[in-house]
Image (tube, rainbow, N blue to C red; front, side, top):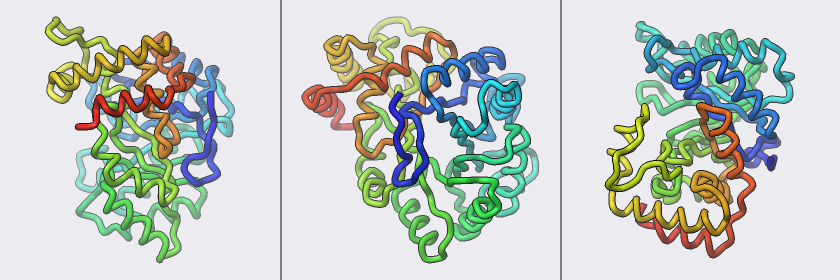
Length: 321
């Protein structure tokens, strides 16, 4: 597994980041523990979660994913300093108005709660899950700076931020001499490109912000398991995938992906991961898994190296995205 810096920081992360949104949802605790142990064996040192995972699942609750990770850490499966652990804050964690958002009040309470659930003394990368227009930006950034100064958090990042807000945040951190964002998590994959590439990508390259794309497989669409005109396999995400991706243009792009994958003697999922990692702005791609087999297949995408011609072919197939 390739290890590289997260942006211009000195933090070393694996090219594949294990996303844990499924933990407590489509993967129970025992399965999740096996997945984390196997990911570690395969060279993945970078795990990503969020305090709200997996609050939407039946019989689950906010913080369940963090608890599963914390129990795994407590079991001694890995030395804490061998793992780069990332989590996020922003979402609704309780019934009170103060149980969500990016106020100083909520951030300081949320980080303590995440540390308890994760059973650790520090968080390597603490990220803002989404913007909060009701809280002044300086209040949010100064709260994060406080966490860094106290040693509870080592690096900070954001997710789902537009380019203008990322640029403003970097500027404010600079002029106020506060800790600044090391990374951003954008939604980015072969059939969802423009949102990142038009403005965020040049900004991240210029400012050295590490990029950790989520949904590099377009929620499973780019694995090839969905066939145009055929009955679709059952999936918790099926309705969203159909609404977002079922179009003639995207199925045509899927066919091109299949052709390139065949030439690489790789799966479509592996090839889609390789395409994301070929972007010079990307530090690590976040993948999820419900089984060991799924994990092993997807992680091999980090070993696939596309030729310039193959990447150009895939780029051309989805240029309208």
